[in-house]
Length: 267
Image (cartoon, rainbow, N blue to C red):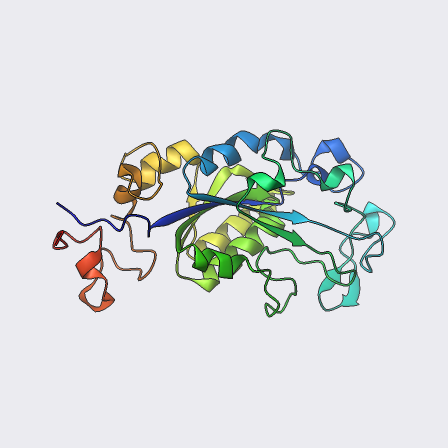
């Protein structure tokens, strides 16, 4: 009988900025084409996980990066932590600030990041408030605290906040990052394609959707990826999210308690 690390192998679903500001509901803000269509896939990936986290844009009417029209978007601002201008969006308390219909209330998540509250900051990634990657939002630390080993990510928009969050998570290391393409929508075809390429180059695994991705990546085993489940155990026939070994190499130091090591027996 193989020895599985029950309650230590943890899957976390992360919803990146799934807000009405990025849909046609708020057409005057920053609508992403078909941005309101990701709810079912976000909920499906959450059903695979032990924990669920969310990030939300949360902006002030005093934001220093504001511009008056869409024609002025992406102009340089001179601000180190908000280098590009944007129209007003996701203003705290507004309709655009709300999560998409069909998602949990924020209290239904295990962790929440509010991004861009400071007037001179407009982060894209969910891991840092600043663009230099020094001022943590606490997401990485929380993931380490719950011993996350597999992250399943989706949200808005593919070519901005999803991409930057995935790159930050991949760089932080210590877990395997899976991106659910069906749970993402982006702004433009060319920038979306570049974003997928950047995420893959950083080591992220791109899933077609929650269901097909589970079958493709986890040895044809469907169902949950929660700790101790068959789907989760099968996932670890992939390169180890801790060491990158396939399976664990002798140098790993985990082989005596490794679910992908046939030599690891119960005591």
